[in-house]
Length: 300
Image (cartoon, rainbow, N blue to C red; front, side):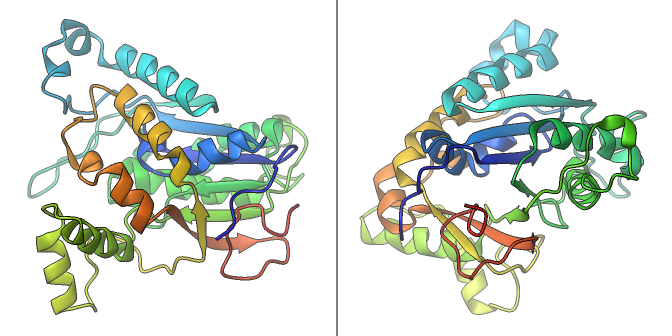
């Protein structure tokens, strides 16, 4: 697997639902491309205002309880600086993750309730300003079925299809056709199984034992039942940037527990057994051959 080639003049846009999603999905890829000379922009659709405070230490901070939205903006700025990316807020309000049976209605004004044509306009404007060659976003189930993630998928794919159409939203700038669209595969079952066995072989207790056992007993069922069954087409070799990924994650102190899921696998085990981040190529306006080791394959 080749490392990333020099990428000056190339532009990548990653569209995410909340601040912290950019650091848990594709962060090492973005850091690698920035280091190779590409420009990378993250778009956060919401401010994450309704997220829970998941780090017990941060939960004691009066500021976080008084102004979580403000704290999350500060955290996002720190993570962006760690990764070297540009960042833009789309400006919509977090929908929250509804729980219960039946599920409660989403709050008035929430991102997930906005018409796709309306919520996509801001992304189309950013596409026409930044002119990305590649967009990365979530699959049909949002990567996981949070209403904001599913809405993020809808508005991202709509924007990809229509940003290049001069008859759509002419007031938002000159049309720009994005070359390629990818879905992030952060929840690839193959990755978790590989990490599971690598942990055991290295003498560690695996955090994935139960999930892997269930999946191997019935591989027709996804390890994570809400993951869309896409095939990985593109793997980006980025193990040298895992430490940056982890630093960016830790910048989101109110959302990321330093003893939690994202840090369950030691970095050296991760780097030796699965040194990639995984994507599915969904649409390409240029010729390319699969499998790929470069998001800009066919665009260079």
